Image 1 (tube, helix red, strand yellow):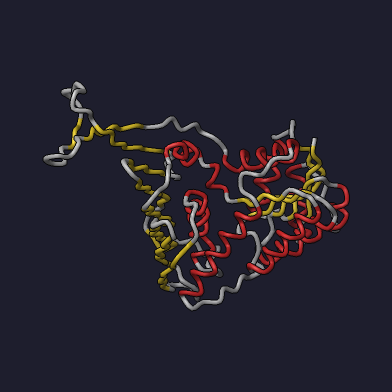
Image 2: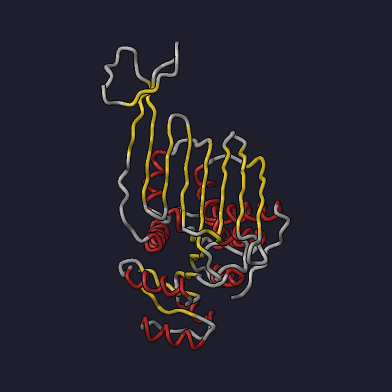
Length: 332
C-alpha cells in the first residue's frame, strides 16, 4: 500500500482527500498540508486526517505526493517531492511555464519516479468508450462552453478550460503541429473569456477548438471525423455516438430497412451503421488516482504522462502567443 500525502486542501484538494481515503486497497492517506491554518483545522476535523505544518515533513513520510495547489506553486512542490524520490500526481496545468515543465521531466527521469498529470477528461467514460473507434482522425471539432463563474477568471480561458481539449486532441492525433491560428476576446476579465483555435497537423488533420466561460449553458463536446466514420463524445452527458460507413459488395443482399448511400455510377454503395457504445458511469478523478497507483505498483507508464502534460502546456502557450498574451497566474 502506498503512503500518500496531499498538498493543498481547497475545493479540489478535499475531493482528492475523500477519494484517496476510499481507495483503501491502494493508498494510505498519511496527511495533508495547506498554508491556510484555519482551513487546515477545518479539513482536519472533517476528514480526520493529520494536518502537517511543514511540506517537507509530509514529503519525508510519504511514498506519493498529490499536488492540488494553485498552479504557481506546482513547480516548487513537485521539485521538492521528486528530489526526495517520491512519486508525484500533479493537477493540470502541470506548471506555470513550459521551462518549469521541462525541468520536471528531466528531473523525474533522473530520479526514476513516476509522474502523472491530472488531465481528468482522459478518464471520462464517454471518451474511453469512444477511443477504440478513433483511427487516424482528420477533422476534430471541440466545444467547451461554461456559464460565467468569477473563480478562474484571473487566467485566460485557454489555460482554464481549453487545455482539456488540447490534451484530448494531442492524445488522438499522432502527428506534429504545422500551424496554429487563434483569436480571443476579453469580455469581463483582463484575459480572453472566449477563444477559438485552429490547429493544423503535418498529417493533414485539422482541429477546431472553441472555449468560452461566457455561455448561457454548459457544453463539453468533441466531434471526430475520419475515413468512413463520425464519432461524437459528450463529456457532460456521458454519451458516445458512432456513425460508420461500410462498402456494400455488389452481390451482398441489402437490408430493406438499412440506410444506404448511393454515390453515383461506378462507385460502391455504402451502408450507414449507428452505434451507441456502452458508457459505464464512473468517478473520473477516482479512476485517475487508482490508475496512478497501478502504474507505480506495476512499474508501467501512467495513462497521462509528464510528457503529455508538458505538450498540452506547450501548445496552450503557443496559442497564447498567437493571441499576443503573456498569461499571469495568481496565487488565489
